[in-house]
Image 1 (tube, one colour):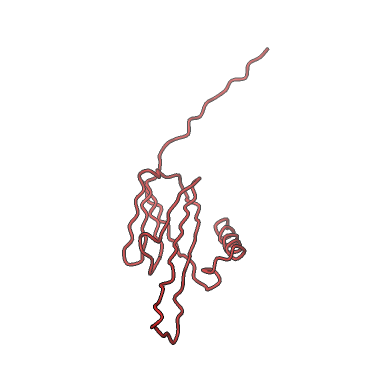
Image 2 (tube, rainbow, N blue to C red):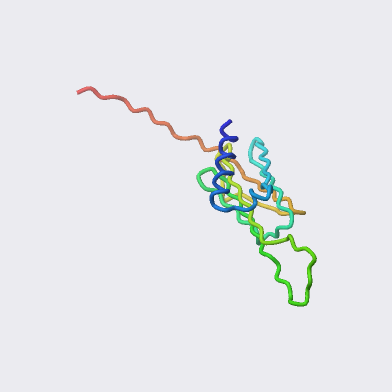
Length: 134
């Protein structure tokens, strides 16, 4: 339920900020596989090159941004229809476990981005504090 609420908030925010990817019905689909030692994130980004994609992880949240600029045509070209324009797609997803960002890797093949994020197995140190009497 929390994930669905996050998605709805994200969609509303994108509409407020003018993100046209939501208005045109294109959403950046993401799958997250929680393996024993790593998270594997797969995202569909057809038509985007490696240099068009930015990946950031902050506070256990994965941020994906893909931007492709419109190709400039010469004056001699006469289009009957031109629908391919600049496109920006954004997505943020809360990761289900903390990851080692310095050991993360990413590949892009045939429009499929695959991120491998090793999980951290650090256990938070707990410390018992005794109450002193005066």
